[in-house]
Length: 76
Image 1 (spheres, one colour):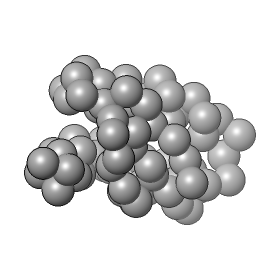
Image 2 (cartoon, rainbow, N blue to C red):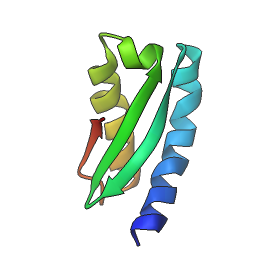
Image 3 (cartoon, rainbow, N blue to C red):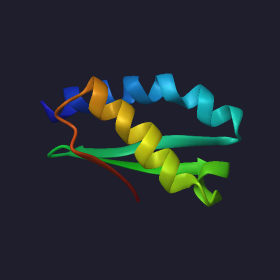
C-alpha cells in the first residue's frame, strides 16, 4: 500500500516539477509514511526564502487535493 502511494505522490510531483524547474529548483520525494510526505527541495528551491510557501501552498495543497490520504508535507 505505502509503495503504491509513494508512486502516486511521485506522479503528482512530476506535474509540479516543470514549474519548480522554471525557477531553477526541483523536489525529490524522500518517503511517504502514514500520510506524511517527506521531500527534499533542491537547487534554487533549497535556499529560497519563499520555499516554505512553495512547500505548503503549492506542493502540499496539490498533493492533498489529489490524494486525500496525505495529511502533511515536510521538508527534510
